[in-house]
Image (cartoon, rainbow, N blue to C red; front, side, top):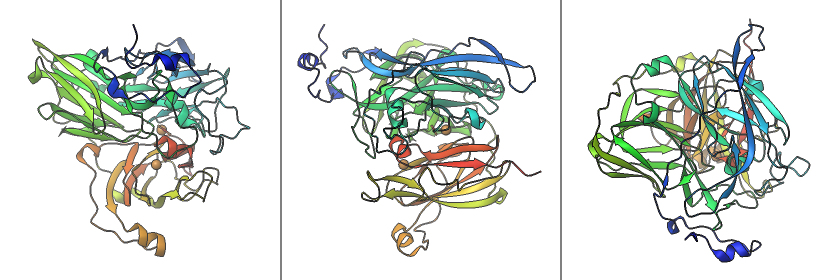
Length: 510
Ligand code: C2O
Ligand code: CU
Ligand code: CU
């Protein structure tokens, strides 16, 4: 059968530039939504701390694979963790630590265009290098995936994840300096769910009624292969939307409540998800687990790196088809069965306490700018944090066990999703300011009163949208481990060039 969206001429003449695929040429809702395979441990290993305790040991190979992204497309070359994109999913319990051996079994040549002018990606560096970071995890520094701790094909790294934190949906992804955007675009991403008893006792929809939705977009050529700009660009927004690695999938659902755990794993797209108005949707959680109480919503805004935990009630929708879309495109369809079913699941009015962190608990306030380099200031343009490139000495050194306020002052016109490794934080407020006056005279003039975060941001976060020309204040308890971590913009093109900085948590003096 000749796929409709696939040009035979393109296949014969492989050297010709293959045109970009228009997703409107594809039939919608012809592939079922794929669900990630749950990772299985290979055995157990003793902790290095002499306690003798043994914890599960996993091994995840990174490999080149092919996968069909749509019924009518030829297979696409991808890089994967454990054989699929998204990769194998870790389904874990709070307090149950685990080891993962991340094995780089990729080819030695990248299949996406490396821009050697980007910092850390010079021609003297091995072209294929990977390092895994578990986003949202309280991980000791040696297992956190520092961007320069990469390994090359044939090598592996074994990381320890203590999982000592509240239930949340985390995700793991590549973090190699200078090529993170390419490695994630190639498919190096996957899910890591932590569960705990407090959450399990709530009676939320679970088992097959709890479904992860991993969102990203890609440029695809008409031969089904990924396309990525040959030199660095500040933003990559693909034409083709994927959910769990499929284009326009559908999901058969029963007429009852479902829990959808959504991750924005895109390089640069900010999703504005919207549900049809007649559908009852509650947001119950954010990046770092449950909100204090469910929030009724009709749409959700998610910048790259952010997560939303949703409960959708399909009970009043028997026999209907419901389309989930974003401002830019249709994402997927839910097909509600006609049969009435009983639904024992609940969405309690109170989910868990999330006390607002008191500003008075902060021992330090830092003013940190988000800056755009104009062309000419560097080879390719690019963005910085606090006007400081990656390789400069560490300037942010919070003390373990203390709380700080970070005032993120965005001097650009764009939203930058700012992420800190290791910690969780709360958003205090956002306030627009006069950027021109600040840049020309150094004085700060606010344009309007501070705004509280949206109700669906009133939980623990690890990634916060910092709007253009706005100061966003976050309050951060530095808990967990002393050592070197990073903070950065989660727009992957920005992160690679060079909107990322190391920071160091200092051990508390005794
Ligand atoms: Cu989602 Cu530093 O990463
Ligand atoms: Cu992270
Ligand atoms: Cu950015």
